[in-house]
Image 1 (cartoon, rainbow, N blue to C red):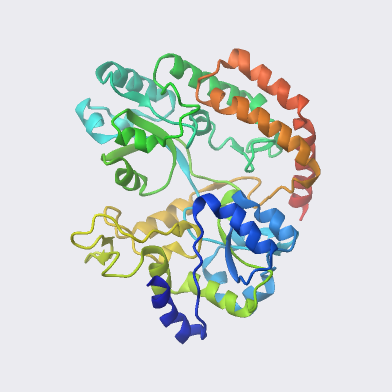
Image 2 (cartoon, one colour):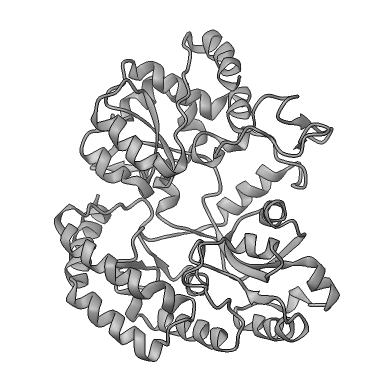
Length: 436
């Protein structure tokens, strides 16, 4: 139905129709790779640094877009900041157009508002991570059936939140860019990381962190929904509390504990790319251009059909139609196109996207913004060190493992598995990238 409505517009505007090919999340990477390598008839595809954007671009599985941007994508250049397009370059060429969404993020702690009100917790007094300790202590005493912190392996770790803005982990944590030193370092030996895992350990021993934090496959929001937790650390953006209310079923309030940071995956995280097998790259670029300039197409793709999947409020926000409990149309809209063209959901302010623009503009950019690492020459070492990461990282960052004993073991095994070689190769590529 959405495809039909989009095609009414594209037929008029660019004399083309579009066939949407949804792929389920679980099968995404495997199916995407298959489509790209088998030369299947395919024009446009969502590409991502989380799914090998850099490698696929270097292998020629996507077409370079620089010339097409100038000839058929002028609208994109008007709305996507040059810095983001530059940040998507592989070997000097652009292979993906980043989606317009929240490029910056900050970390904070989200909690149930009913309990904040009940115990008169003054959120204005919470400025740092350690300021939360008194809150955790009180919740543990007054609400013994609830765990104060319910972060799990399915989201942000406690130590990740505490070290926000200190490192850009470059996707794999194996040699990270230090914001302070602007070079590649072993994060797990950095004093800031050591302090973070020690604080996590202190909270874990005090009973503030859920016992199976390192292994649980349940999301923190679902644990709050199940009435097992008070709150959780998370990567946040404007509208986060409204978003989480929809998941937890509780009104949520959060405290912001870091500045807004923009890491390298903000540029390469989610893009639209043109597949090498595209039959008509010019027409494909014309359609990408519409994703950044045409409000009707973006609202159809992101939200569905007006009147069936949503209705408009007088202030420009939207809500579900009368009697509809949940929309039967779901789309991961942040992944592609210009999300600033879409209607905000009820509960967010009508000027939500103006607020988001301010938020993005306030971001402190990573020294490695736009840098992507080609791992081909150290694949063996990456496989070995990743096994070590899987053994220790979550345990340390959730406070489950004692850092006095486990952190030296962790670093010793990383060294033996070749972390030094990975860091040296990353530094070499990083220096070369900075020169360019």
